[in-house]
Figure 1 (tube, rainbow, N blue to C red):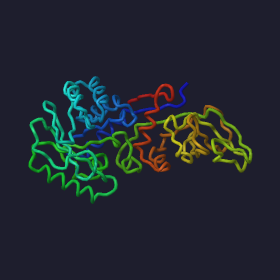
Figure 2 (figure 1 turned 30 degrees about the vertical axis):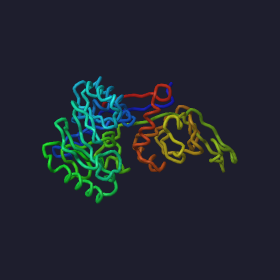
Figure 3 (figure 1 turned 90 degrees about the horizontal axis):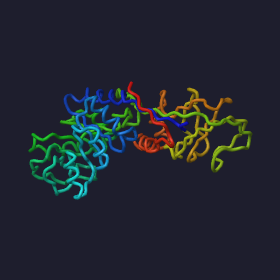
Figure 4 (figure 1 turned 120 degrees about the vertical axis):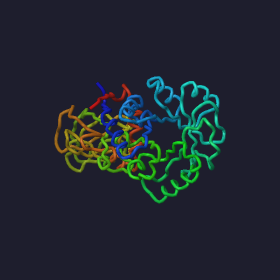
Length: 341
């Protein structure tokens, strides 16, 4: 029996793609499915995104790109990561499109030239005269979720740098800009986090019409009574000051439920209960208000309990939590179920 179960709803992914497209006023949607679809399963999510209206798939490793090419022989696949010279031939044979952030432009393969307009990472300082292989011009926003004034600066730099090439498609917007900064939509947007129904703003995704695609469930493996002075977990971070029922959930940081989630809330039989003590590699404890039987369902994400809440508690972002959960979601740790609502 699985220790926990991850459910990925492809219907939610499709809904999110369509919701994003409704606000783009004609711009295309490029679906970012790197990092195994942010832990949701790249192949499954890619198919749902394409059926929801996305016109390209974006990844950052050659392995990711080749795996998608096997499943989607006719799809546009944009390889956004750095590529070694010896790998260009493989990329060309796989009919990939490459993002180039340096002056060396490989021939015979579609290219997107990437400008650094303020992100301070990969990108050209100036735009060279685009050769015939160039099919797109792009940049990346640093503060679309937090500082619209700096977005305006980046956008102005990008538009100025690309104004002499109006025939080439331009894309700079990420999920945050796609949802709330319409002037950044241009010809296409690249959306990752919003596609999965997670908020780039750390808010309730429903505020932007998004539906979470990931659900995470487990159950109580054991229930016990702590007497005053007794503790649970490493370091005795929780010591009972009165008779206290606790439930042990067979999920820990090896499954993506991080140590800094101690104190967050989960649903036990539909009721919110706090995680107490120190999260272990393979389990965590929840404080109960009464004795419950082993096997009582525990919802870690779902039924109104958002991944954004856990991210706030841990002082991180949903991107990091989703990727960590998905990385641990294998048959030995968690059962993965794909549904299509």
